[in-house]
Length: 326
Image (cartoon, rainbow, N blue to C red; front, side, top):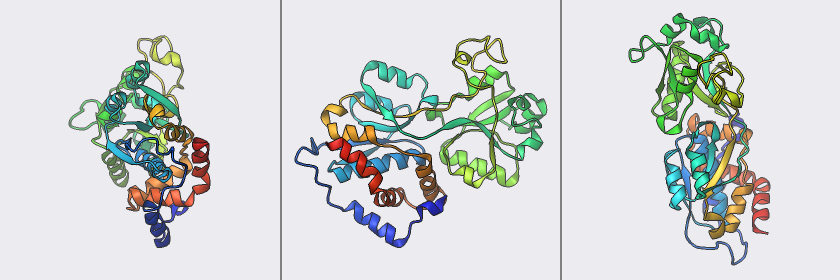
């Protein structure tokens, strides 16, 4: 996949020149104000790629852009009070009540679907099928031998599920309770820590199951498989009689996540052309995965990778800009 984004010296040179390029001429009305548009950066590389590319194109349009580092859930406070203007990769499957409450307040609005085709859930390296016979079926996790194999000093006698960092939000505990499993979710400290532990376990073939997501470059590096859960239905979340456990809700897989863009409610009035551009802006799995790999595996910088994409794909993003400034 990385070959799709080969960063030659010439490409990087062109990309760096792009950072100095004169903004494209769209008339005296753009930018509508000289104040910077503040885009949030969260805790994972894919979101950085999505956000940086959008920011570079906004700069090409003539806007000043600032990047605000913010936790995934805490960023909604900044979006609500206008100290941040847009967040471009919101996964609805793990946002809990944070997004619905922000939307209901009227202070944060949905800008549109981002375009990524996502999946979230528990996964494992393929050798785990020898340690927990019956995988990929989730019922393999009911085995006491499987739980013991996954246990750590901190979770004994329960097995450990390596979970998302705390700021991301996660359904692991609800899934464990719903499916009545002798497991315990333990949060990783960051995306890097989560990935590093999966890679280290795969190298030594030690037992591990983790909450994870796609698209992600790690699927190109490791032989990973999803735990197959009871298929998601809305009733799973509010009707205990639905699903394999008649006493609990949450006994099913996560729904395939919709990934949206959101903004401070005042952004459309303050920067109407920029807002329309963000409505048009799209990111695909095919574009994002090799860029994540270029950064996390091949040690290119976010700026290099984002600038290279912008230089190579003007025919794609120019349409979004032209529609926004008409």
